[in-house]
Amino acid sequence: MGNKQKAEQKGVREILLMGVFWRILFIEGVLLVYSLGYRWFTADATAQELFWYSVRIIVLVIIIIIFMMVTLKKFLTQKIITPLEIIASANKKIQNDISSADQVALPENSPHEMETIVSSRSKMLKTILDVSEERLQLVNFIRDTFGRYLSSKVVDEILESPQGQKIGGTRKTITVLMSDLRGFTTLSEARDPGEMVDLLNQYLEKMSIIIQKYDGIIDEIIGDALLVVFGAPESHGDDPERAIACAIEMQNKLGDLNIEIEKQGYPSLEMGIGINTGSVIVGNIGSDLRMKYGIVGAAVNTAARIESNSIGGQILIGEATHKLVEDKITADLPQNVMMKGMKQPLVFFSVKSIKAGFNVALVSIIIKKNCLEIKLPFQCWKIKDKKIDAIPIMGETISINGHEIEAKISSSLEQFTDLKIRFDFCLDAHCFDDIYAKIISSKGEKEKDQNLLRITSMEQKDKDLLRKWMEQGAN
Image (cartoon, rainbow, N blue to C red; front, top):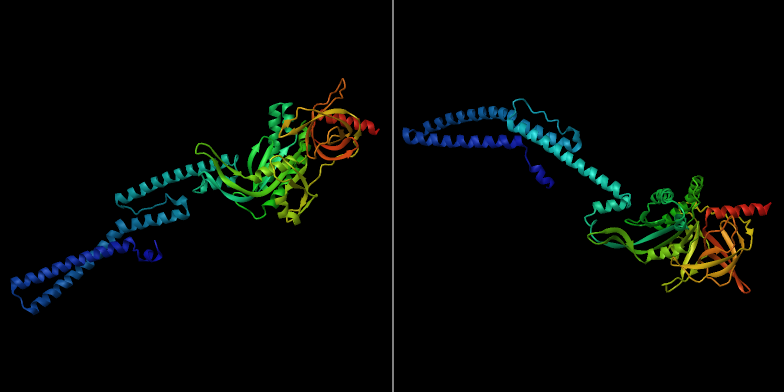
């Protein structure tokens, strides 16, 4: 309704009084005409007599009108107009103060119908308030409950958008962060499930706080792996920078967490992170029976491939992300690897720090240089796509500590190859369990290759024995 229409609207007082006035005036006018006509036809009065007769009638009509308007106005005001105005005023106050909903004081002796309106109004408002409160509690319950499974921003978009529950999505450019704990699956097989869930929950809680700080969305929790999205459902304009800063803080926080969990008797954890930027489809995926809010696109797969080449404590970013943040980060020289199903080598960079208003740097894992020089024969198996090769490869250690192994391996292996290692050496009191490692560098040496392997998973008792040997060797 426009402002002009609102201005032309009249109140109940004006409408009611004017309506009564014109109706009384019409009735008196009819009576005046009827009296004059009747006098003229029956009394055969002259014009002068009719004139004075009409004057007397008009005066009488005016007196009657004044009397009726004064008395009716007072009556209507007390009985109808004032109660209606009080109810209307009370309704307006509700818009600003809902607590005043029951505060309607009608004049004494108001009509029963007015009191019924007030009583019905109070009951109706109470019903509306109760329903609204229930709906608000339900919405808050949905937000709180599903906010634990989805980002609060995603929940808001689903609840508030008319298209929120429809299957489909939109194409957006986002930055994807993939993180994964090294050796956690192997660790889980040797420990109580309850202990591992507790450890995993401590890890996820710390990481979730950091991800939320940088406005990331945890799209998936896949065991000990996290799929985090920056730039959906809305972009901030600096999604790659926020993803990198988030990854650096995650790695640094893991160092603090390790101090806590080691006191609880858990082994320390290591995490690899891969980051990639690209175009994906963001939205509801699935069917009418079962759907999820997620992302689909090559950028997600590339992020996972980049992460698979990382070692514990490392953050690798793809070429697309690097181009967007090149002048804002400190990173190592590019590395590349040819992976299955790709038509060109996968290029990535190891990030050390970022400026651009974030000013966070990676606290590198300090690897002791006083390695134990020892020759231990071993067999190793290549791991590809989480499948262990059936054919063992022979090798021998040159030096070893709790983080790295320098070894000679009989076959030439590519950089970033994952290995399962089993030592042939075994004491009566101690045998090494399987060790998992990744080749981070190699150089040819006559008939055999000399490789540097980064340990990704090793039993704590094996680390303790190596530490003991190193201390004994140093004395």
